[in-house]
Structure formats: C-alpha cells, structure tokens
Image 1: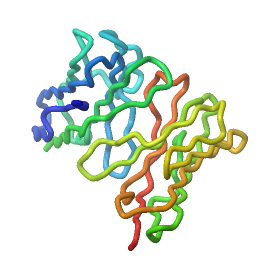
Image 2: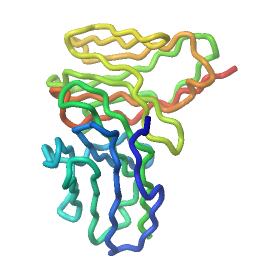
Image 3: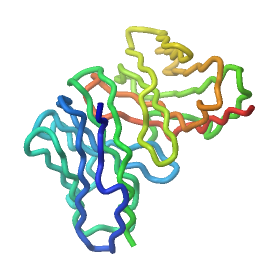
Length: 114
Length: 112
C-alpha cells in the first residue's frame, strides 16, 4: 500500500520568502506529525495533529512556522520569512491511533534557504 | 539538553556478528521507546518498540532491551547483515501519543 508521501522532495528558496511543504499521510491514519532534521542531528518534533486539530504544537520554533490539516488528512507546513537557519529536512509521519503506535515516516522535503 | 543520548556516532561490526547499539535517556516520564533505521535520502523506518512495562522485546534478528533503573536501552542485531548498514535512531515518548524525542543516531557499518 501507499506510504507517507511528501512534496516537493527538494525546495530551494531565498531568505525572506514564504514556503509550503505538503504531507499525504497513510490512508486511515488519524495522527500526523511534523519533524525537522538538521545535519548530524536526529529528527526534532515540531507539531502533532489528531484529526484536524493541532494536539501539540510545542515544538514549533517561532511564529513564522504554522501547520494546518483542514480535512484530517493532508497537512501543509507553512514557513514565513524564511531564514538560512530554517534549512533542514522536514519529515512528516503518521500513525494509526493515538497511543503507543509506531509512526511511519515519509521521505522528507529538503529545504535550502539561500 | 539532550533527553535521549546515543553516545556512539558510529559502530563497525563484522558481517555475521552481533551489533549492539546503545541509548540512554534522562526523562523518567518516557514510557514508550522505539528504534528506527534510516538510509540516506529516505525517511526513518520503524524497526522495533518496547513499552516501559517490559524489559525485552524480540522480532526476528532484532531484540530491544530496556533497563528502567539505569534509564538505558539497547538494540541487538544478530546476525548482522550487509543490508543493516544504516543510521539507527533511538526515540522515546511520554504516553505514546506525543511527538517522539530522538537521539542523534549511530551509524552502523557492517563489514564483509
């Protein structure tokens, strides 16, 4: 079956621009997560959705970052006024339920801010 | 402040031998632990998990051991195969539902 997909796979933008990153979770998975992985680090949690609502957004670094999941399926991570420090691989994951279930990751979007 | 620590950035093991990857954590509220494997340009792939009510979980060649008093877990791979060469991440969560906290990873190299 289809896994988690993310588009685009690569995004190059200029400092100060706005970007949107998309995630399509596994069909039927109610939980969706966004992570950011910088070079030499493990994935860092950003935000978690249960259905349409953000259940935990404590990992978002500042108010330039925002994510939505309007219909409880596809999610979009939005970054305003990008900075060079935002360059990283942005990973999306989904899981089938709310507790003690493994998360399935997409291939990630590599964001480069010039 | 790293709550999940993988102190070995890399590990080299001969094919057919046992690979042991270690992970330490500081947050006593963590109650669910997972290991992920990652190849270059791919997302992490789930390997095995363990809840805090257990001290061992086994799945084929992979076994995870949890020592709660030491706040330590380890992943054993036996026998090691060339396809096991990858970066392995240890991850933990509170209550199973929240975002995972990851270590920095250990690059496992299986030598022929």
